[in-house]
Length: 126
Image (cartoon, rainbow, N blue to C red):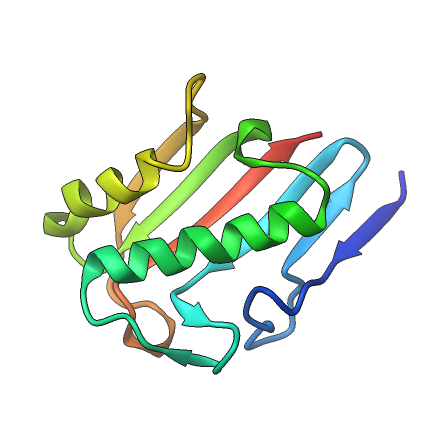
């Protein structure tokens, strides 16, 4: 099985030795995205809704580059700095899906890159 690296300048460049996404066969594995504005390389969101929106827009840009949409997502992992942020992130996240929601888990972690409050990774079936 061959793999294809997915890269777009409409999502943040990786901040480590990983790819934005990798397509293997009919599966797309998207690395965790944090709320970095790809135009500036900075975290500009001032609240959790803004952070969640930027993360989802980064994911959308990668999906678009791969030629797909949120409708193809089968699994999502959400990492939060505090579970008290769950409802606010869930509200933003839900706006990006129409029906047939993917499987998902949400966990609180001790820390996230650049001190952000949310990171989301996804797996799509193409």
